[in-house]
Amino acid sequence: MIDDFYSFQPYELEAEKKEGLLLRELTELTKFHQEHCRAYADFLEMTGYDPAKVQALYQIPFFPVRLFKEYDLISIDRKSLFKTMTSSGTTGQKVSKIFLDKETAMAQQKVMIRILSDFWGKKRLPMLIIDTPDVLKDRAKFSARGAAIMGLSFVARESVYALREDMSLDLDKVRAFAEKYAGQRFIIFGFTFLVWQHFYQELCRTAQRFDFSQGFLMTGGGWKKLMGQAVSQAEFKRRIHEACGIRHFLDHYGMVEQTGAIYAECEYGHLHASIFSDVLIRNYRDFSLCPIGQKGIIQVVSALPRSYPGHSLLTEDEGVILGEDDCPCGRKGKYIQVLGRMAQAELRGCSDTYAEEHGRDPGRAVSSR
Image 1 (cartoon, rainbow, N blue to C red):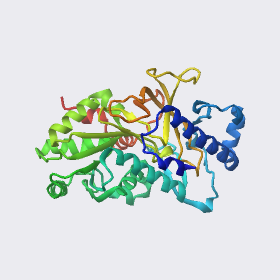
Image 2: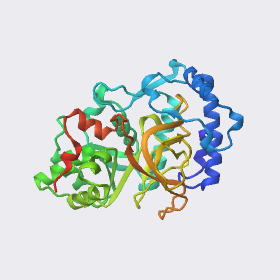
Image 3: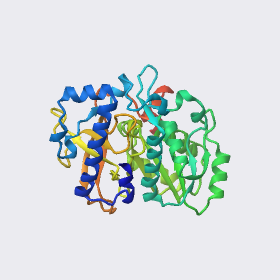
Image 4: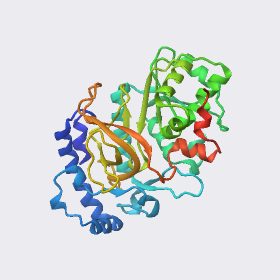
């Protein structure tokens, strides 16, 4: 049961104890989804799954994340359906549909709060959102972007949207927020491309300067486009710091198929797996397990998905495990680097999707060398 995890801090357990806890839960989830989702049961039969042979986490079958675009995968009675989330996608692309009951949605929210509290404390902080409130009103836009904003709103004492409906920066709102919370800790949240295009570049254009040195900038997605054309993560942080004094950066890796169990960035720039999830890296040729330091296809497992079979997924992303239980930040568990999308994979990150839909090349947009 997921309740067993709540007696531990998010990054408390070392490898052996964490694997034992996750293995028990994921084995139970595999059985539950096999019994309640016909498509998943067919998948397990096709792969020759035998639960008696599962002795380690890597032996839990991994489900290709792309199948959520092709099938309605649900393990609950539709009468119990609380909400349906969709992945990001450009016009014409199929999107993943994730079916949540109230129990699963609440677990996702609770776990994300616990993870983030480990980085900026348990106190609810004010949050400046680099987005428009319109993203929550338009159901066509309510995908991972809207879900992330809604999820973070639960940890915020106050939420202020920095962008108008036309995506222009409301400098008066930003100034009022900066003055109100001067010298206090607060959160700034936005997807990477939006932060760069609509916040950073507008501050540069207008020569506006704010003291956001006490803020935590939380971003996610869009790095492949930025790094490929003009700006590395280090350059992004340097320029943002020069523009408004931000020193605390909290990037994260996550997906709508495993909402809640995010991989958050520590002060050393490492993305960490909490006790609620883990990462395995698979070989490109035969899907065998890659050792630490060898890049491959990212597989993610999570203890949270109960209303749909999303507990063990093979993504379309490339990455590498940098280490385990030995990050200088002191957090236990694996820490990783995400290298980007695999060749031929569809564009689906929120930042890249936004840029594509608005006819912009994110790389060109950020280039100001």
